[in-house]
Image 1 (cartoon, helix red, strand yellow):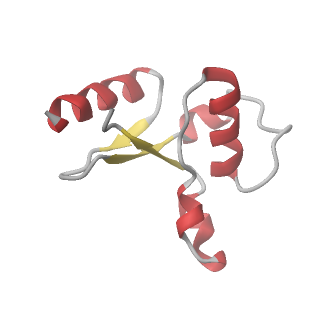
Image 2 (cartoon, helix red, strand yellow):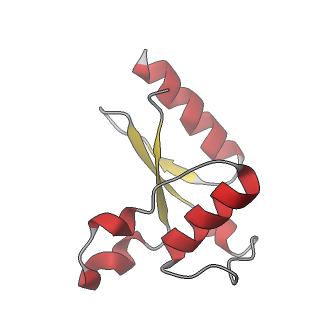
Length: 90
């Protein structure tokens, strides 16, 4: 059941230009959005790049992602700058 939902999310994210990281288990998936970052205007948002992209995605595309840098300490936040986390359980 989850594999079908996961595969649907992988297909969707790939089609819109993100690079999904396919999980072997669970119901969360990371995606690299760096190919899209230059195509959207994030200048009106504050915070790290992943927060800004997440806010833009929510406001403009009605799709809520989770900025993974929220789970990192301050010195490691740059590791998540081009990533966004999605849940595909529903």
